[in-house]
Length: 249
Length: 381
Image (cartoon, rainbow over the protein chains, first blue to last red):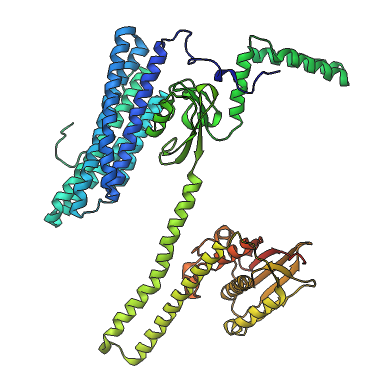
């Protein structure tokens, strides 16, 4: 009969990997990907919390978003360090190399997403003092942008090129939102000069969300590249009717 | 490998079972099973499989995590988070910051940690995550779907919003007429009289609504305190009917009292309110001039059934499950016209709940509606 109720994996020591203590390349890559997901999780929460703070005019929550951005930055540094180490010591090739390169690039993009969330959070205090309510379109736009980030990270975790393509297809919706918010804020500004300052801040919020959508698309493109080795064809861009040029960040 | 060997032996065992009849075969089969159960080499694999099988029996998503790696994910977890998570870094499965932080810690033991999080699987779906230590430094991660609990919370919020909205409507009417009346020159005496009539009606509506809200909250507060008095339903029904006579406008409310006694353990005023609401509904929604039947009946040795039956337009089946929802109205215009608060059946439902009874609503469009309440009989002292 069995000696104990508990299965063997509870009793064995060390992780499921090799016999020796040093982790293999697979395991190192896995940890690297895990760290990127942790970063992504922080960025996702940052977007959500920043928008919630904006809608509820919650200074404290906004300050917390700004504070937590440091953790994202620290993780990016850690990922860079790991990538350099893996390339230097292991000299990965083919799929593994693609994985490592994609990881490095995705980390940079996720860090930018965190920055945009922080930027939104920083505007909470200013918008509050102006007495102008964030318009109803912004939370909806934020929902789509956050969903794109969420799905891009899911695609990354699952190495799922199909899901990645689906993310890139939604960028048009965010762009359309941006254009419509831009026009309606412009109308507000023309109606009453007092609206100009708060409307400008809200415009920057919309701009940040639009950029977050773009960056989620970038992540998805890199996921596609890492998984298939091929580049996604240039995506269709929503018509930019704001005519302020395309000053790409 | 191990599984194949086991099944081969099982097939052999089953073949033997077919050849040798009865107890002899069973004995052999059991021996074969014992022989395959504990060969030293496949021991660990078999036990690991046992662990996975144990987790598979749970419908909540479960993960066993060690050194940040997912050792085992049960079927529910793989469905939710993707098949890739088994064997990979746990942050690939759950990247929520609070969870990542707790799962990254390596110390053994400790109390289970509860974390509320949203955004696993579909974005916005709420989960409770429980991380509990297992012997040997592993952790069991359990995900509990919280959408139901959140939905209940949302209902409460909606209720406050609905109640304020319902109170606002008559109030807006009142304010409108008051403002008109303040401008005395604009209103002739006949119109004034008509306005005051409407205002009185709206004020009554508000009072009714507040009364209903208050009795609802009282009934809910008593919900778990079972009523103890012994009430005879027969005189109670007569009493309620007599009180409603002025409202019935000459329509017949026929009481069919059945044969036996109708003693229930109950709260007299609540049962009267229940009867009142049911009969008033029947009067409101029955055809003008048609009669209302109140029927008492035996429903088994321990149960009394009370039905209120009207002849009217009836209710479409799609609405029936929602009738006891607060402020749910099949036809808002009609409800307003007959002066309903939208709480009548919600109150009935809560009274029946408190009395450990059952509420059934049956209706045939074009024929009429029957509301049946089944209550447990009073236990004779």
